[in-house]
Image (cartoon, rainbow, N blue to C red):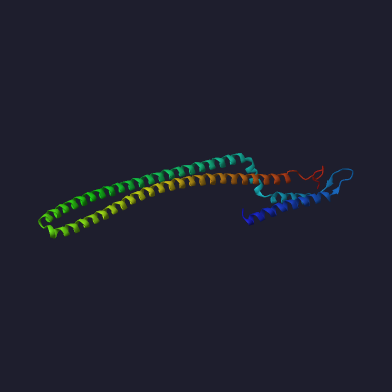
Length: 247
């Protein structure tokens, strides 16, 4: 309800009480009928006040009565709606967890495939280098037998160069192995984060549904109490004497 609607409703309720006061004053000041407890009231004035009271009674009272008459249905409908929202949230959370698990599985499989490919490539490269080194070593040995003095220095230099290459390749293989381990650790971290996020989403959805239902029930209870007070204030008719209306 807007501020303007609230002011209008308050003004109409005030006019109801004001007209009731005027009606009571009219009856109190009416001329008494001798020897009776009756009085003579101006019919036109009383009817006019009663019409004003009837016109000034807010239509919201009728709506409030409808709410009171159907409050059990409204509460049940709200409970069913909250249950539906809770089930939808749970389904969405489960779908999110399943999707995260599938994505983590895919990432782990890809990391494992890449690691296996890297290891196979490193093994093939190591075998190729080993065969190349062995062949070069044999060639150097054959040349050393033919040219002992001259090829001795060249063979030693070639051998040292091959050893250095082997160490470099070994370091490269170690680095590739560390990459594989890092990939596996990253895949495990992604899976753990996905499970944590799914649990957090499920907890937030349940908390939101419970909080919304509690707020709606609190609002409905406060509305019912306010309507009950208004009905109690206007429940009894104002006595106008036992003689009824007199012209």
